[in-house]
Length: 163
Image (cartoon, rainbow, N blue to C red; front, side, top):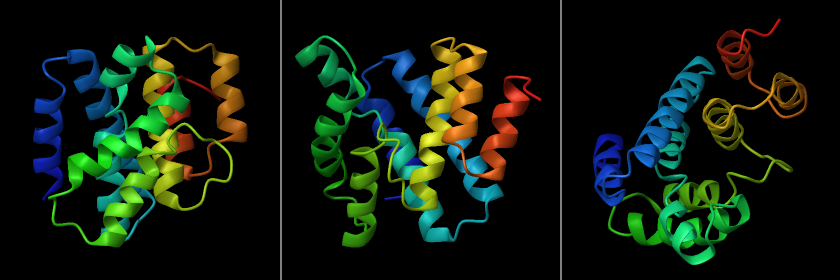
């Protein structure tokens, strides 16, 4: 399955929810941009892009089951749903498991291991900061304590006009 095929499948899965579709497509675009700027190898870049597209796969279920999209609920339900969503993808077991891991940890900001994980956190934060109107102090704090990639920091500074 290609990145485009996963995106198309995820758009269909989203059942016309424009907010969800726009969110994951923006996260995908930022993740792709940061990953390429950080010169990820092709496999890691592909893992990152697939994970970015499906990272919020659990949001519809969480809204229905819990009444909200709390990050911890997304991680628990998302890993399960990602496995089902990608089961016939043809991805290697290692690739498949890494994508599922990333979906199941995309709100965990400690013990981040791997550039794919770091970049997914950064790309999702950039989009969430806009969609949730985060205060500049919050954005600066996250930039100083969570962001690690040069490309992610540059994007965050440029988008939110930080010096």
